[in-house]
Length: 280
Image (cartoon, rainbow, N blue to C red; front, side, top):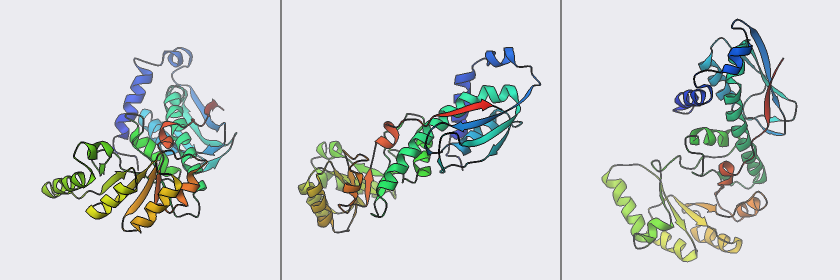
């Protein structure tokens, strides 16, 4: 199922690229010409965006037929063929770049996510994304994280209360911020999870005394401090490690016993997977 708002995003992307018309195609390809093409993978990774590609193509021209050979979430290698297209040649050529741009970005995210998931295999720790996404593309980028095997954190500011350091500092400390959040949720009859960011063991102790949260984020903790924090929490609340986590050290963070690691690099620092659409 496409994320909410995807159809409108497709329309904006097509309008952005096509404008008043694809003059290159209109001037070189006769109107009734039929054609076919194939989507070629040009590197190793995890494929993502096939379902989206089908939605883009169908929305632009239902007469273009897509034959899927490799689905979302599959591990792919150079020269694999993900799908073939057949139908009006003008439509295939005009929609090409929008399809590739979305798929390359999503596949890059899915590929990076899968690397983190594989690195944590057997630890019981899950990989979370963050809100460090491309404005307007968050739903698709978080979709790509799921395709890669990761878990979505909150989607935005509206679906979880996350008390960060600035919230606490501007409200006289963590206990005050937590109590304010609980009162706010109760007054508005909102059923939202509360997560709180902590910067040291003293703040973890303050949260444990105060209570009223679902998850404690342990931000920029060293490994020894992280293990102490996890032992201190003793599974009374979920724990999440954040800050400075890379593919090289992710497993070491997970082995400290946290339930989650959150990695902004899943969406803000990925390399797109190279894909190409070529006529048959």
